[in-house]
Image (tube, rainbow, N blue to C red; front, side):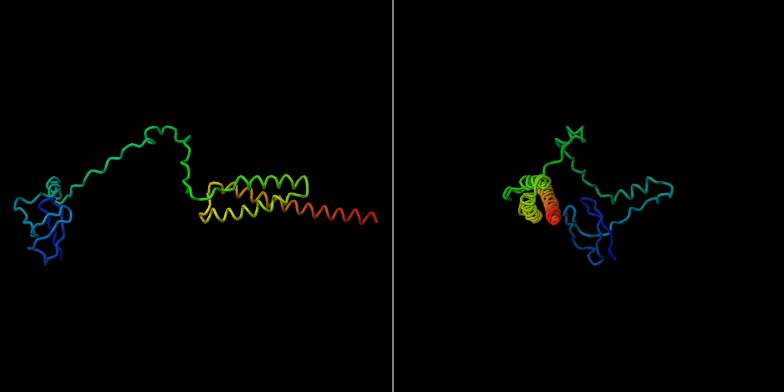
Amino acid sequence: MPIQVSCPSCRRPLRVPDDLLGTTVKCPGCEEIFQAAVAEQPVGPAPEPGDGLAVFERRDLFREELPAPPRRTRSRRDRDDDDDEFDDPPPRRFRRDLPPHRGTLILVLGVISLFLAWNTCLGFIPGIPAYILGTADIKKMRMGLMDPRGESQTNTGRWIGLIASIINLVGCFIGALWFAFVIAKAK
């Protein structure tokens, strides 16, 4: 059964196995080498049960001195941070070796396809490339091969291009049915 001894240098309590009593041991705290021996209890009057001071002094023999926690220096943000609600979030970092995003191009193609879908039957011409380019760029951004800062623009342009192409193709199909109906009625 291990016996508790204290280091003579730092007063750190250590548990030493029975077979090492009387040999030299090394304190892991201060690395002092000393002989492990059971400290004899001083003979004196026994503390009275109501005497809290004597109990505190006895426990204080085994108390380890802890170093003071390191003092935190105030950063610039701590010094002038009185208006937290108006602070902008820090910009996201990106790798400079990544190719730039094409979010603006894809968004413009999507908006043009939406405009052409309502006015002519040519909305699918810029809409289909907006969807194809947007899908490819989103995959590259999620794999980390393209600058991810334009992901929202790319995704918006991609979906606008798809919706405009569907509206345009449905409109052209309805227009073709109407044209066929008019020709069939004229005969």
